[in-house]
Image: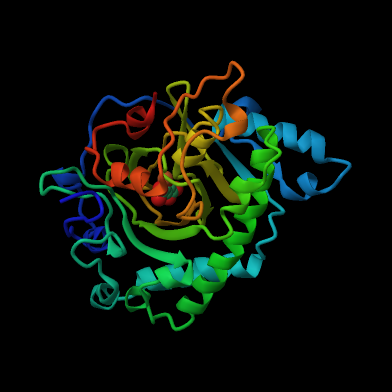
Length: 350
Ligand SMILES: O=C(O)CCC(=O)C(=O)O
Ligand SMILES: [Fe+2]
C-alpha cells in the first residue's frame, strides 16, 4: 500500500456530536511541542505578511510590492493575498456550500466516501495503519482541474449548488494562481514565464476541511505539521478565530483570518524550482473547544508535462543546484512511495 490510499477512519464530526468529555486515545498527541505565540502578536515581524495584488499590477506601486512579495516568499513562505480578483460571492458561496455539505447526515456524506486505492472523496488523508494517530478533522478531497480529472461520482449532489460553485471556484483559483505565479517568478528575477504559464494547464486539487469542536483542543491536532507538496497552495479560512499556524524559528505563529483574503503558501515544487530560495513552510491546524472551523485548500500544480528541478536561470555561473531535476512522473512516484517519516525534500537534495 502506498500513500495514494487511506484506511477508513471514523468521522470526527460524529464523535464530537456525542459531546465526549475526553478525546479517544487515537487522537491524543501529548508530545512536547514547540512554542506557540498567540493569538496575534502586535509585533508586525511576527505576523504573516500581507500582499496586495492590485499594488503588484499598478505600475506606480509594483516595485515596492514585488520587493515585499520576495521577502514574504523568502522569509516566510506564506502571505495573505488581498485584491486578488476572486469575487466575494464566489468565496461566500464556497463557504456556505461546504458548510452545508458537512451538515448533512453521515449516510448522505458517505455517498462521496473515498474508495479503496484513492485519496479522493470524503474521509481522511494519509492514514496507512490502524495504529497511526489521527487528526481532528474530516475532509472531502476532489480533483477539479483539468476537467478530465474530475471523478463526478464523488462530487456531492447535495447541496444542489455544490457542483456548480466548486466548478466556478476552481476556475477563479486558476486565474489567481497564474497571476500570482507570474509575480512570484518575477520576484526571483526570472525573465522566463514558462513556470507561471505551466499553471494554465496545471492540476487543481481541492481539499475541504471541517474541524469540529474538541473537548481537549490542546491535546490534539487538526492537521499534523507538514509542508505541502504543491506548486503553491491557496487557502480560504472561514473562521473568526485562528486555526492555521506556521512554524518560524521553532515557534508556531497564528494566521489571523481576514475575510475575503486568500492565504498563499509555497509548496515543495516551487521550493525545488526556486532552487531552495523560496521555502515550503511547515504548517499545521489546531482546533477550538467551542467552535467548528472550515477551510478550503487548493493545491495547485504545474502541468503534468513540466519537469521538476531548479529553473535554468537560477543555476550555473557559480550558482550550484541544490535539488535534482526529475520528470513529473518520477517526482510524484517518489512522493507517493516514500515512507511517511522521511523528509521528501531531503530525498531530492543533491
Ligand atoms: O485547514 C487549515 O488551516 C490547514 C490545511 C492544510 O494545511 C492542508 O490541507 O494541507
Ligand atoms: Fe497544508
